[in-house]
Length: 409
Image (cartoon, rainbow, N blue to C red; front, side):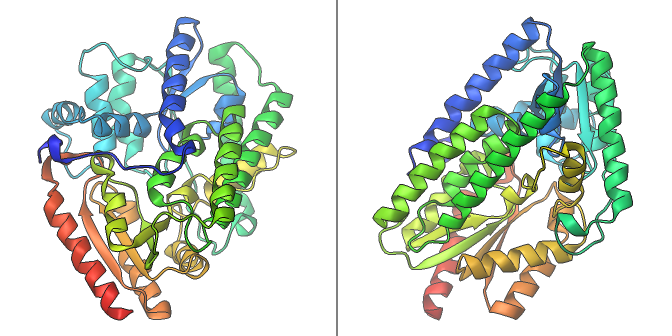
C-alpha cells in the first residue's frame, strides 16, 4: 500500500485540532524530565496512570508512541526489525514496533525508560513481549496481575477479594517507585490527582451525553483524537482543562443544531480500535450521509474514582474494565450504546494482533442483531502495520454496507 493514498481524518471541532500540540508538549516535557533526572516509566495500555502522575514520575504509554509512528508512516522498519528477531506478524504490531524501536540502536525520539510497568488486563500478550525492552535497558519491570472479572455489571459488583488483590499490588508498586525515586508518596497529591482524573472522566461522560443528540455534534473522527488525555494525561490538570474546552464546543454545536453531516441518514457505532495509518477512513462514511456517532474504546479508560479512597477506587476501575472479564459486560455496554445513541449499523474492526478483543466480536454481533436487528460490517486487518492494507477493498466493503443500510430505510 502506497503511503501517498493514505491520509489523516479531518476534524470539524476546533478542540480536536489542539490534541497534537498537547501531545508534542507532553513528549517535550518528558525529554526534559529525563534530563532533570526524573524517573521515566514506560507502560502498556492499562497501567494506572493516575497513580504514576501522583508520584511525580513520567509515564509514557508505548502504544501511543507506536500509533504516532504509524500515523507518520515510519513504523514498518521497526516492525521488520522485530520480525527478524522472531516475533510473528500475528502478534500485536504496537508491541512489535516498540521492541524494534528500542532495539534499533538509533537515538530514541522518546526518553529511555528507567522502569517498565505492565498489566495483564486488555493486552495480556504485552506482558512478555516487552521483556526484551527491559533487558535492553537493564531496568526493573513490574507486572500488575489483574484478576479476571467474572461479575456481570459495573464497579460495584466486583468480588472483594479481587479488589483487595489488585489494591495490594498498587501498594507494592508504590513501594518500588518510592525506592527508585527516594521520595515517599504524598497522600494529598494522590487525592488531588485522583480528583483531576474524576473531573476529566465526568467531563467526558457529559460530552458523551451530548453526542446522543440528533444531529450528532461530534464523531469518532474527533473521538479517536480527543481520547488522548484519557490515555496518557489522566490525573493531570491539563486533561481537565482540555475536556472543559471540548465540552463547551460540543455544547455550542448542539445548541446551534450543528451536526457532522448536513442531512444525517445513518448513525453508526464503531467497535474496536482505529486504523492509525489511514484515519481518513472515519470520514468516508460521511460521504453516504452517515456519522460514526460513538466507539467503545473510551470504556477502557473510564471509571468512577473516589479521591477519598484512591487505591480502592483505582482497583475497582481496572478490575472492572470491560475488556478484562466475561463477554456479557461487553454485550451489555454495546446494547446500551445502540439504544442510547440511536444506532442503525455497526462497524467492527478486527485487529488481528488482539485476540482478546477479537475473540468476543461474533458474540457481540449476534447479540445486537438478535435484540435490535442492527446489521454489522466486520473489517479485518492490523492497527498499525500498513503492509497488508488494501484501501480500495475496505472502501468497497463500506460502500456495499451503506447501500444495504439505504435499502432498509
